[in-house]
Length: 67
Image (cartoon, rainbow, N blue to C red; front, top):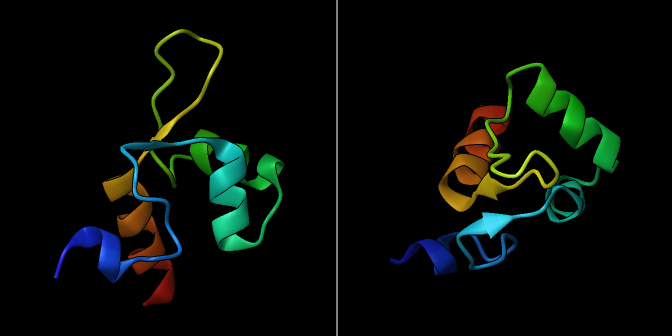
């Protein structure tokens, strides 16, 4: 079973934006930034302006919240 079929609610792309993560979890974008700053959700900020999250990291975060 591929990762895309295992998690259909998560867009099948390498990196996700904070607003996409907020939609997946039903929270505000501010909450996503809080999770990142608290170290709960690892993200990448290569340019200093745009925060992105790798899809496998989001899946692992989802799994850790459901247990």
